[in-house]
Amino acid sequence: MRVAYICADHGISVFGCNGAAVHIQEMIRALRGLGHQVELFAAKVGGRPPADLEHLLLHQVTMPAPRSEELAEANDRLRKSIADAGVFDCIYERYSLWSYGPLEYARDRGVPGVLEVNAPLIDEQVTRRRPIDCAAAERVAARVFAAASLITVVSSELMVYVTQRMAARGAPYVVQNAVNPLRFAADVLPSITREANVFTIGFLGSMKPWHGLPTLIEAFALLHERPDEYRLLLIGDGPERKAAEAALVARRLDAATTFTGEVPPADVPGLLASVDVAVAPYPQLPSFYFSPLKIYEYMAAGLPIVASCVGQLNELISDGVTGLLCPADDPRALAARLQLLRNDASLRARLGAAARRRVLDGHTWGATAERVLSLAGFMCSAHAMEAVR
Image (tube, rainbow, N blue to C red; front, side):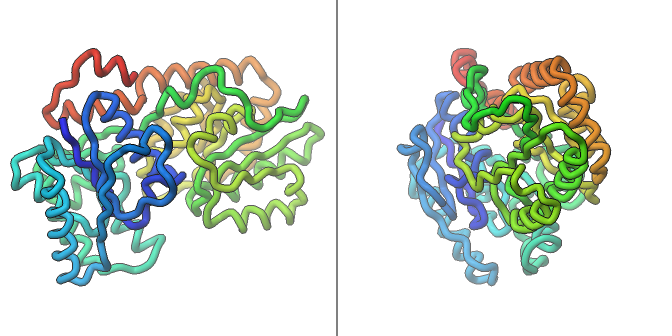
């Protein structure tokens, strides 16, 4: 089968290092692993592709500011780019603010058009980024949701959002995020030397305001009031890094903290193997619609996890079985759970092993791609499925 994968979002570098880039790359790998030919149509490429995607056929597309005449012309060009590339059996698009042409093309051609929704983009843009023409964005959303023959969302909160706000041809399906088991082999070696009698707390993420770094830093400060040795490893980069650095310096914790900066996905497993526990201290938000990739990667790495008791994390993590949950925005509760794990190596081992089994049994990208294609009406062979599990 020939699949056109479209990401017309200028805010996503498809060969970058953040969660969106990982999601795109892994879905393409999974589709190819099922035996399908994939061509990528992307607005922003970013860095060099990883070695296994170097020969992926890439079409650069443009999606300008949403003045009506430019928007129509850009979507016409995008349709033409897909048409000029030949006949596709499926059009797969990651929802972006201004693209509707690919899925309308799929509908007009009578081929399945899959829309993957990862966030309520209009609300995000209004509350967290620069103002936009909301009316134009709503019109685009109405068109693309109506054109899609299948809509997938990454969380039940997003399913409610899509169902309530958009006129769609069918109800959306929840297809959570996943992990690539080949990246997280059981024998991955630490890339940072582990110090004896030092308990290392790890955080992975793009350091956005909603990642809860202030709560983590307050909990880390509470732990340092005790005689035990702790270290903090912050993996990634982002807009909250400077504030985090300043807060750590003010508490004289900077010497006990390592910032890696932005790292390629290939480096993540070794860095996670360098920590004793992984954290996801999300704050309480009005709507927690995320399906955090970090959680799946923590679990695949076999790490004990301490996460806020919010949104999808309540589904992914069984408290006391595959991780520990704690109230959001509560540094003392977070510090207490981290202290508990430091003092109980057997609990750490049990939680980490159970988490790894859970995610590898039910949340691989191969299984995700197979489910999406099945919902879209395609059958996958047992041999192909075995190859991607």
